[in-house]
Image (cartoon, rainbow, N blue to C red; front, side, top):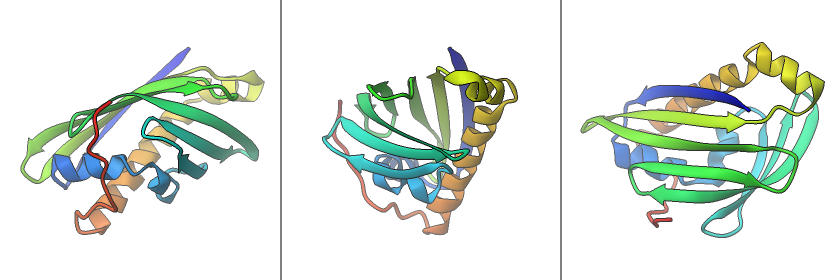
Length: 150
């Protein structure tokens, strides 16, 4: 099992950052390799990814969700095996630290080589930078929100 931990500061209030992160179907707008996400229930999402020409489909179950604090998940079924948590830390009224921690199991030779070369870490770093650009370019206005707790 491999691990990655990355964080970024975004110039929006913690509520705005959290609200946007709960809009899983917008992830393809800032996550490279994510083709589509369908929110099937309050706690189940279906992902379609294409990375390095390889398409994968899997479900992820939200295992914990606390408004303005955290969203945790684990994959269920499918080829991808991962679990993680995104936490939101208030820095001041207009800035938030978004921290992502993820455990994942590389599958096959190419994924194991990519893991050793730091591909996943660079991918997560890039995705967080694009999230920052995405939410800040909207003037700090999220595309929606889900304020439920799991």
